[in-house]
Amino acid sequence: MTVVIPPPKSGGGGGGASLYNLPWTDVDLTDGSWTLQDSGLKLDTVTNVGGGFMRVRWGAAANGSDYSWTAGADHVAPRWYKDLVIDGTTVTTGDLAVIAFRMEIDGTVDNFDQAIVAAHAPWPNLDPANSMSAAGGFAGKYVGSNNLYGAWTISTATQVNNKSYAVIVAHRGGGGVGAVCGQGYDALNVASGNVSRNANLYGSTSLPLRLMIGVGNLNTTASTVSAGDEQKFSIKYKALTVKI
Image (cartoon, rainbow, N blue to C red; front, side, top):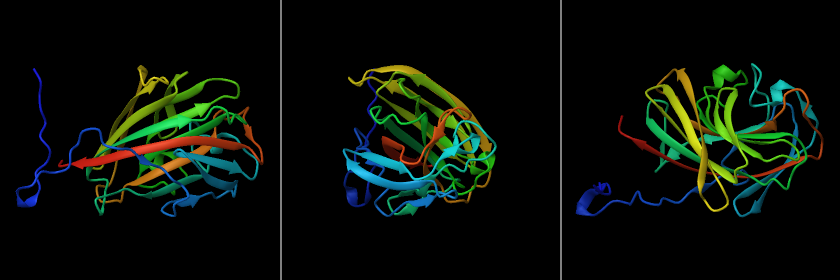
C-alpha cells in the first residue's frame, strides 16, 4: 500500500511548499552569520573553497583532551555557532525540531588526526561538555586511514568507517534531546553502516536553539595539531519543526 502525504495547506486556498526532495543548506562559515569561539586563539583562517567545502587553517599548536570532541570534561576546541532560524522564527529548545546533517571530509587534506562535529546546542559557547547539551554528527580521520563518521553526543561518538559521507539526524523537543542516528554512504550514494546514540539530555524549554560546527583533534593523547595544519570538509543541513 502506498501512503501519500499531501503538502501543507496555505492561506487563500493555495497549496503549500512540497516536502519532497528538499535541498540542503550549505554551511558557509565565512558568510558573516556565524560566531566563532576560539578561546585559545588557535585558528588562523577559514576559507570557502567552493563546492560546499570549508578549509580551516590552524595558527597555533593544540593537543590534549580539551581539543578533542570525543573525550574530556571540557571542550575548548574552536567552534562556530548561530541561532537556528526557520522562516524567520528562531527555534527554541521547546520546539520539536528535526535536524539532518550531511558531513563529508576531504581526505586528501591529511595533516593530523582530525575531528569535526555538526550539532544543535542551546549553549555552544560553554566549555563544559555536559553544559553544552549538544548532539549531532561527527566526522574524523586518522592520518593515512579512512574517513570516520558517526552519531555524537556530549563527548562520545559511535562511528562507522570507510564511507564517502554520512547523513546524521538529531531531534530535540520539549526541553529534551532524544536519539541521534544516521548512515554512511559510498560514492554511489549507496548506504552501508548505521550509527546511533541516546542523548538523555533535559533542560529548559525556552532557550534559543543553535547550530554548532566544531573542529579539533581525534586522538586525545597522541595527536597534536601544529601551526599550519589544515582541515577541509563539507557540512550541509536541513531543519524543520512540527507541532509538538
